[in-house]
Amino acid sequence: MGIVFENGLAQLVGMSLDENDRKFFSFAAAVNGALTVSVVADANGRSAEVEIKDLTTAAEILELEPSDTPPRTSGAVAVVAGRTYSVKVTSPFESLAVDFTVDLAIA
Image (cartoon, rainbow, N blue to C red; front, top):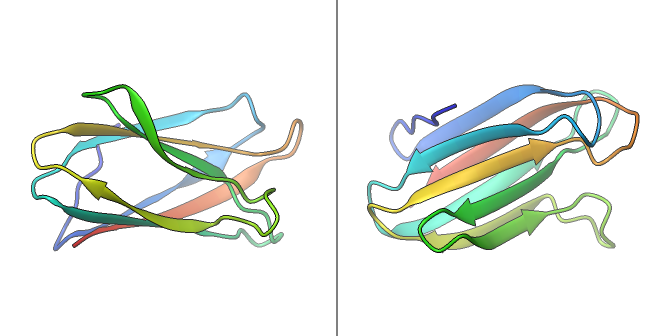
């Protein structure tokens, strides 16, 4: 699913049923800049895992893991105009669903 940025901002909202229910999104960066990613906890206090890949180089450039100590639920990474990036969102739990909200900003 394509991500549409308006004024440099975008939001992904959905549900991942478990760690095998991966949701994939993509976007082409319109400008060079810093992509800031923030994961909002759901009503149960659970946060989704997020992975950003540069599809031009196939490199993972950012991974947010709420199970890390301390939890990583936000981060920033440089993006290059014209390159396409994928965003994977999934529940970090083997058998628990997570409602996710992921805020994205390019500046």
